[in-house]
Image (cartoon, rainbow, N blue to C red):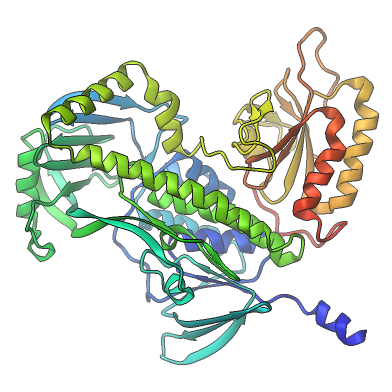
Length: 540
């Protein structure tokens, strides 16, 4: 018995994160702030200075702030005012962005710098110049053979391994996970350049011509990103500033002069996703799990959504608060979401490259109609912004009341947060370190019984559950453990219990009589251990 007790008392091994790009940094930071020991390794000796990914959408900004960015992204980025679409050089549509859905142009090095600052606030660090050579896993853990910057090799043990090491993922290849999909027949050219000419800097310009697509977007430093399809037969080694200038002259509005280059590259575009994102104790996230066309600017963002979905689940499993089967929900939820992104980016890319006159005419008519009727503002921009993802929870996706739908993001209503005394949004006010039971408009006559039921839930699940009460008539969110003032008389009320996951997606919506049912639902996730445990580090 003593031997068994001693074995059970041994803490689990750390988590290994392979890759220190935006996704690896986000996973590492989020695990560390949830009290999980984590090592992050990257084979590169230093961060890449190349701008690479550019677009950061509002949901990603929310996630960065939860990780500790504290508003750094909007400060460093360039807000995009609109997308302008042209057929040849003739304007056909303009899609303006309200603040709620407006993207930022924020080059990848800036995103990594922001995440690096977030990571510095934890106990975890990036080990650079460290290469993963091999993996061997069993039911107890994963043995990883690593080579450090000096060439020394070691075999070390981890509880889980997360592959965030890009499209050519060593983790995915060592695990034998298939990477399914196709490669576009076109080669594409990307250049960060100085540009002279009459072009609105805070708009993204899309020129769709029979000769190929040309996209021009302003960068925060005053330069521009040029993205275009290469003509047949152009070898990557032959791409120069003069070549890019010729392509801009052929496909753009005219009168634009490229004055110097910061970065020029040619590459192939793929549409692929991993057969699965979990093999035993090995998981994949970001480009290691899915890659697609840059159309829509979703690549970096999709990886951050992966990280945010995975980290809270992996932390619960590591702490022993949830069964490892919880990680299968990461596979299902993010797998389905990533496949949607791959499909949407593929449709946009194919629309860019249409050449037959009747196809071009239909595309242009669709763009005009979508812009004129503002259909894109209702659906397309909210999807790009990251606000329309709906996960399949235990309830039928999309069911609910009062604007709260199972599987969807918590509505981002403006509230006065009793914990801080400040006006903020509901998603910013709620912690992402615990599940939350959000109580909407409890009646006075039922409050004592309801409070007793909620206290029973708190006692059952300890510091893994927070209870907050929202008075919708006053838009007042009571501090944790507090109860609002009596409701204003005569105003309609919609009493509800809403179970909110740490990633702020709604898990379930119940009437006030359904507290016991929420307890049963929580037990399916947090049923491994009752009562409180040592709290994770505090966070936003």
